[in-house]
Length: 174
Image 1: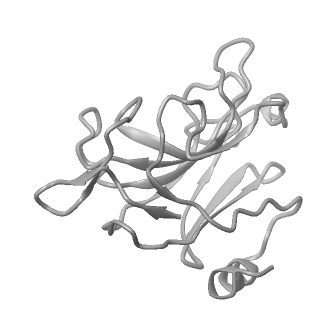
Image 2 (image 1 turned 180 degrees about the vertical axis):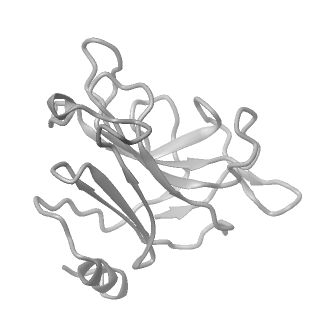
């Protein structure tokens, strides 16, 4: 992905005009409804440098996994300086049997989080399902819109290994 932001703050951090929640923009996601009839699954986010509710998340890139009813969910993040127009490679690996997420940036494992019964945001197995919500690039639920570019998006029906993710970063042709 390549964020462009709307403007830059005095420190050169990216700002986004149309954010939601605590100052983030969904740049890729699946699920557009919360509550009893929800269909949330996962979301890639970038936080604007001027987010008011969580000011310590300057241009944080994160991946969240949700139960179908939405609400809070486990997530992984990387908080490195973002350069407008710079390409970055992100990969999220979700293991439902292990109740775990692995988050990679530019071929390197950067964070991991769990969603099992003993974790901060557990997701019951019954809520780990694939729904009919569309996959959206540049948004998740039309509540915010990403400015930039997204290229080479792949979905796999198995967990990729760390060497496979590193290979994708160095040679994006699978």
